[in-house]
Image (cartoon, rainbow, N blue to C red; front, side):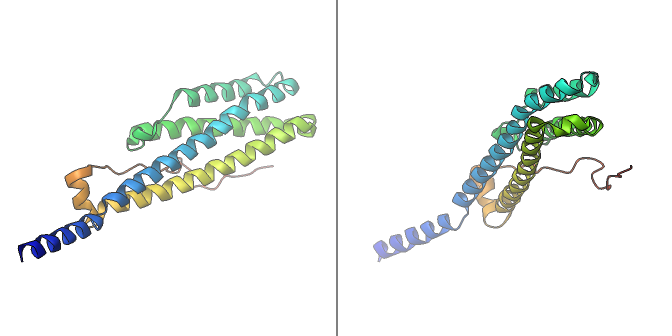
Amino acid sequence: MMRRFIIVFLFIAILGIYGCGYNTMQQNEEKVKEAWANVEAAYQRRNDLIPNLVETVKAYAKHERETLQAVTEARARVGSIQVSKDMIGDPKAVAQFQAAQSAMTSALSRLMVVVERYPDLKASQNFRDLQNQLEGTENRINVARTRYNKAVQEFNTSIRIFPNNITNKLFLHLTPKEPFKAEPGAEKAPQVKF
């Protein structure tokens, strides 16, 4: 009788451990880390392309140094701010990273205005290739951000739902991760004037 009781107790304990969400929360945290690594890879691709883009534009627009300098400085700031997978739960670190990336996006936008002023530059095959690469990279960044936010949502939900929240409080002590947020002013549609 006692042996049956122990077997039943162990069976229930195993089912309880399986249903407590411990493994699910671990898997979801790893998905967040993987998604963050993909975001970093997309940004790194952009950073690798920028020196080539700047050099191509410099050849055509030597007197537009201010814009080119802004791009170069923004790239340097982006390179100096790194958010590791362990820091993605820190809202300040993620906000700093996003601010540096926003400055880069702004500088690249100004660079594209310079391009509009120089029709010969737009005709350069090298520049067109780089511009296409940069556009593709920006799309990859957006996809990576979206996937990261989805992974964060799944993770944050998994540590808050019952019975996972109890397991998390007792054993794991995982904290919610920070999603990417829209830049300030992004809710307003840009105005195009000719």
